[in-house]
Image 1 (cartoon, rainbow, N blue to C red):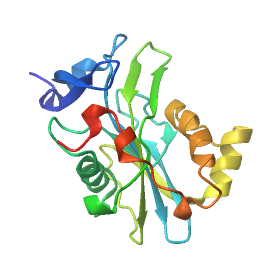
Image 2 (tube, rainbow, N blue to C red):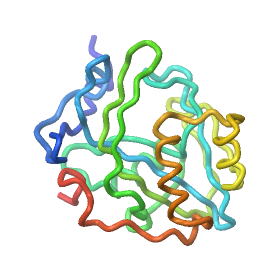
Image 3 (cartoon, rainbow, N blue to C red):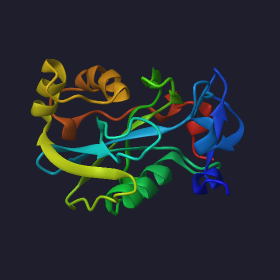
Length: 200
């Protein structure tokens, strides 16, 4: 019997960021994961606290890893902001309209390798959401989620007391460059998005 996630498709991209096809999500993440389109989202409350999450312990990639609020993959033909909105609802129970999803880092890209050799290889624009709602984590995706002052997140990442995912550690320096107040960060330029990440 096929894995239910075999029905989930990721968007494959070339080195220039153009879509070149699709592939099953579950079977594509291995030691030779192809370059594909994804996103990261940083959720803040109106006081500027950041929503950290811990990935579910049974996930194939980075199980139990503390990371940014939400990550995911757009479906073929799905707008990036709609994908962020969809995954925030599914993973964290947060109802966020797609037009309230702010683009921060349009051209972030990374590659990371787990201890067992599984690779993440993503063009991964970074987004921000500001919400007054409280999360209700889906245990299929998120083991736990909690609010923490942004300054404590940065301090913890620096001294190692908060062991963040490799992609979060790569994103943090770029977010720090945007300024000390995450609620006042300037928005990214949509025309710098990878071609595959622009609204279909």
